[in-house]
Length: 122
Image (tube, rainbow, N blue to C red; front, side):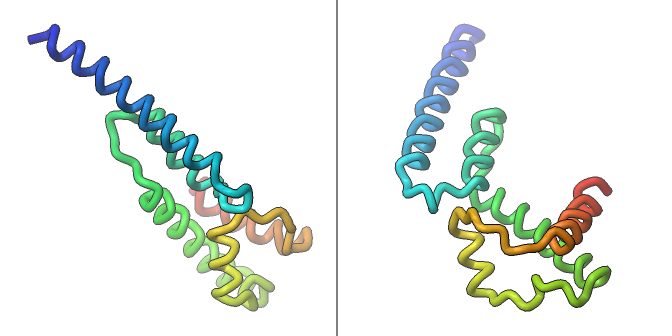
């Protein structure tokens, strides 16, 4: 019945909107340092694609894969890059906290960006 289908979709969209609002409020009530942009990406993707289930862990996995590919290419192209002297503890801190400091000089940052461009644009 088309009427049931129509109202089911309206109800589903209403539920999604409430779910989005709940997730967004939960996010913005976290301390600023824990408001990670990857979480905003997951929430936004869920809002834009209501027909798909997009979890934060899925977005985290995609970003982690990109990061590993960047590190692999960086190791090939710039094996002495200072990123390879960073501890796993520091990487973990960066992953789970919002940071404002820039840890890289212009040359190091450009090398990372170039490897990221290689992965995203190819």
